[in-house]
Image: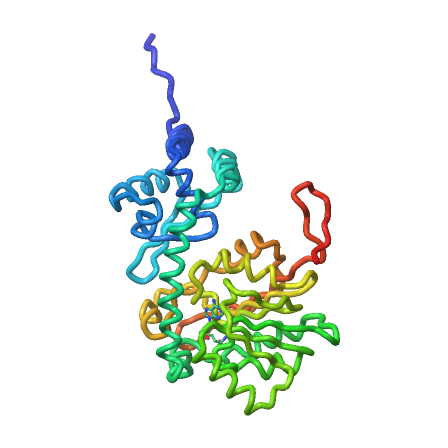
Length: 338
Ligand SMILES: C[S@@+](CC[C@H](N)C(=O)[O-])C[C@H]1O[C@@H](n2cnc3c(N)ncnc32)[C@H](O)[C@@H]1O
């Protein structure tokens, strides 16, 4: 009689071991924490954690082998983002629990400061672009997508909103103000905030020529300065210019009054890296799941979505998210927002 060694199945336990190994290091846990609502390149992460690039590459490899991070190519650069846990399967509960616990960790102050520096560099590049390129703004926009190509879809979402007579709108980043006449017609009052004086000048000229009396223009950074809350916040082709789009969605969701809406029109994910140089884009569009995930984390509920394919290969997503009248408090009780 021959005795055979018991057949061991290594794959599931390998997965668990990889998760435990990845989570068994405070630095790697903090990397996961820093990636909670943002994505960074290796060099950026090495700067944020003040370690060598090769050291950071090693930690990212361990996290990637455990399936805790994934990569995304943005032109020539590779960005790391967190990978969500699978709904079921070996390690899925550990993966989800690890990320949930990591999110309860306070981000150490030095890390927050250096993340701020990375964001400031991304913002500065974008601001510099709009300061230099205001004169050729429309021509550059048209290289990818001009408003006439998706205006009807955007207005269809707007017109489906249940707006009261005194409803207000806030447009973040109006650019040359092309959408403002449509907002002015539909809302009792409209505020448009742009952080580029040159772009705001274009918007001001447009409002004057169209005699838009209910539109107020404000020179402000929507992520840093006080902006008024509104029944409808509109973000038209702006998110891909912001340094940390997930975090930006969370901040801008706070400007939506309870029961109100956030309308986002954005490029779908693409690989046309020339858009960075030609149009000052920080991000090459977004997956539709990215927007849904960020909106969810910001306490918003997804509504209608429309997708518009353009002849030049770009695709646009027009998305509606609403803010509930009440939001659940951490104790589980319903709280009314003010
Ligand atoms: C690509 S343009 C879009 C303009 C317009 N919404 C359109 O689709 O034609 C982006 C605009 O957002 C503005 N912007 C970028 N970051 C901003 C910020 N943090 N706060 C306010 N405006 C911002 C830029 O100055 C620019 O006018």
